[in-house]
Amino acid sequence: LYVVILTVLIAVPGYTYYSALFGTGDTSAILVIQAVMMVVTVSIAYYCALYLGLNLEFVWLAETAGIVTCLLLSWVWFECEKWKRLDI
Image (cartoon, rainbow, N blue to C red; front, side, top):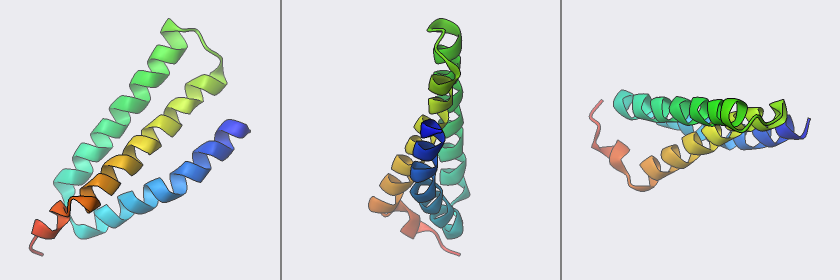
């Protein structure tokens, strides 16, 4: 339950920033952020489950790490103002 609560608390701002970036129409940035997020999530889950043999709660923390990655990359994209280069 604690893992789900932590994930939801991080997911709200993470997906909000991601959706705002989606609204700018910058599909290449969205693709990169989504790809990095999936690689981070799957890599951490794979490592925790198969190499470390951790419990399921720790494997589910990989989702939290993926959302944190999404939040950070979306925030950095807005802060560096690269989204303003688009002409729609």
